[in-house]
Image 1 (cartoon, one colour):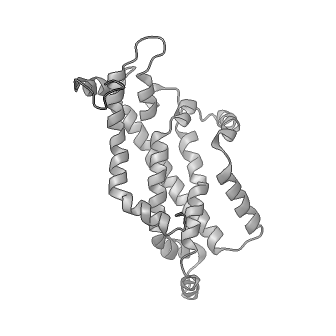
Image 2 (image 1 turned 60 degrees about the horizontal axis):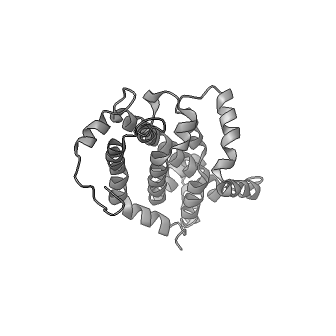
Length: 238
């Protein structure tokens, strides 16, 4: 493939077999498995915790409600690069390096964008439902679990899809915190095909790049309706 052609000529199907063999003695399947573990755990944590925090802000009044909400919105605007160094120092002191804990555990404390997305969705649900459920004896957590959670599924699906994309394509987090090749993700596996000191395996790298896009494309085509519905019903559309 050259700069003047879009499609490769000739086709080298053997690059898929060479790429699947992986690098450093680890098959590319190991990197895909590691990515799926991180994506599934991080997505579950991000969606569940964000829905709980959004319910707290939307349906409960407490001391400093406006202050805490303002702080949460400020973290939404804070560039992620600003907190890289302090986060790395904290995870080093916790002895979390060379594990997936620095990547997945922070997701269980809520993601500001997802919290705002679900908060907007919860505000569209009539408060009379809460009052009726409270009269019937529902406590706060049961109200969240039985009434709110089933009604905000479109926004939760949208958050889950975004979380899947962000974690699947993430390179910076794994590069910072993972040292053992057996724990590398897809993005790190692709990077290992490139060697600045010797010959880079461009063919296998491009073949595995195409393969790594398969889950992303499947998620988009299967859940594109949920993405549109979740954003439009949350008031985030332009």
